[in-house]
Length: 182
Image 1 (tube, helix red, strand yellow):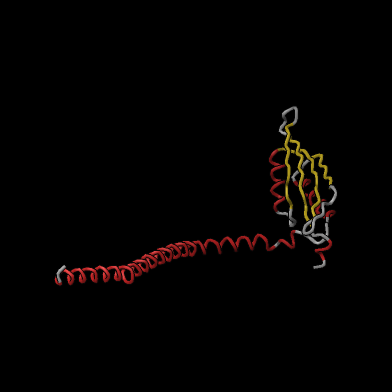
Image 2: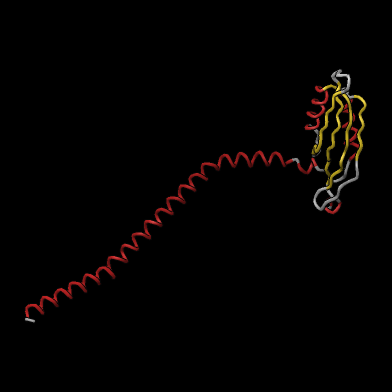
């Protein structure tokens, strides 16, 4: 080989080494950094969109919170510390008399005890027309006591006079003794 060819070969080898060095040391790390930056920017924009969406929901959530707070504000009053069953049964009988329901029978059951909340099942039977019974149930909503209606059974009379026999099972609540002292 001639000197000139050796020199050209050396230049080509040096050029290849420089190009490989440039690709490995400069280009690939910059490209990887660019890709990481693009991923971070995409993640940031996704996070920003999610945050904007959640911020738009914030007023609605505040309104819901206020409604829930109003709904549970009377919880202590609706779940008395004593059973006050006599008072409740008397109120129930007065409401039934107000709506002229006939043959009413109100039977309290045994108190069901739990750690945080006790309940007393009450079976109610009476007869009246559908409007009277509907008004009776509407008045139950106005009671100052937490009530859960579990079962409502309505039966027409055999002569189809418009009288309906109602059987309802509901629960009234009170605070257990271990929670009353708190």
